[in-house]
Image 1 (cartoon, protein in one colour):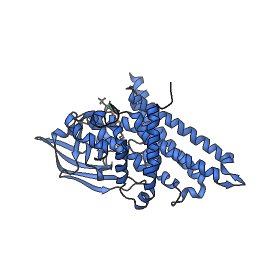
Image 2: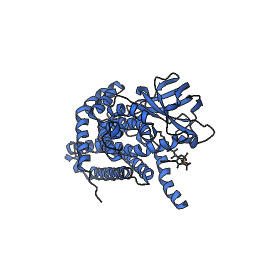
Image 3: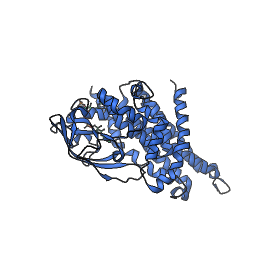
Length: 384
Ligand code: COS
């Protein structure tokens, strides 16, 4: 068993780290101050070619098929730099992977190359006011009418919808069924009847919106895959990207650890740097052990996906669950090591990491949903 990244993956890691230092970190202070749409990050990531990890080679991607490990390696580095950079690779993937899985060849050709270059921003619209963890209970309807679907309903917490050119919508084409009544449909954001109704401000800087569909007519050709198979498309997309949320969390935690270590080495109390006090050393030791455990879980889940193992869902949920909970603990300890400076809003970045680390325990499935999936892996096995 080899725990080393390949030379190619190490190169990606190093190049992404340099890109973050050179092109993301200098933007952070202004983005945080203005609380503006960090669209410049998308442009820069597109130029760097990072979104090319998300689509197959045939459509401008890096690899023949989409691979999870490189996405995770890149996302850890992006997550260290700024929340929106780490989230952006995932939101771009959430909006493009359903096309990779189920889009017609015409749809793939039309959209994927431009997603890969960053020219197009897509979004993934699953959540509704009354359907969060229980995604199968969503109520948005897409009813057949000739060559079109007539869509009515509300979606919320939809990342990037406010800046997207298209969304992948999950709606009921057969409202009398639960998950088997759900279909995935591509909706261009300029379509009449589609409206972004609210910018939802959250703890970390991100673009999160509420949407409304009022008699929005979309061609039937925009159906992704078959009617009634949308829930599976959503779950398989989450299988790919949940472990990358874990990678993002590892990036936040590593950044917090590095800051805490540097601070502890220079901050003198009781006549010596606090890094030489056992109380701080114990914290640093626990933090780095936890970070490495989480990183290994992320790599394990990514490799499971890339080698076609059957337990991807389980491993991806373990990686997301452990890494996001771990990152919360690590950032909290990093704040503690910084003392009063840890909660200062200006100049010290810990306060930003403290805000950024919270949402990953919720989005793409809460920690409790991940625990449920992890437990069900064994409960279901025992049944068979
Ligand atoms: N891959 C392929 N198929 C899957 C799957 C996966 N990862 N997960 C579930 N399915 C299939 C099941 O096999 C089942 O098919 P059959 O009916 O043919 O057996 C179907 O989908 C329904 O699955 P299940 O019965 O497990 O659905 P539940 O309604 O119980 O919900 C959870 C399952 C809770 C796991 C799901 O609703 C979920 O992930 N919720 C969280 C949603 C979320 O992450 N939201 C964040 C928004 S996106 S940022």
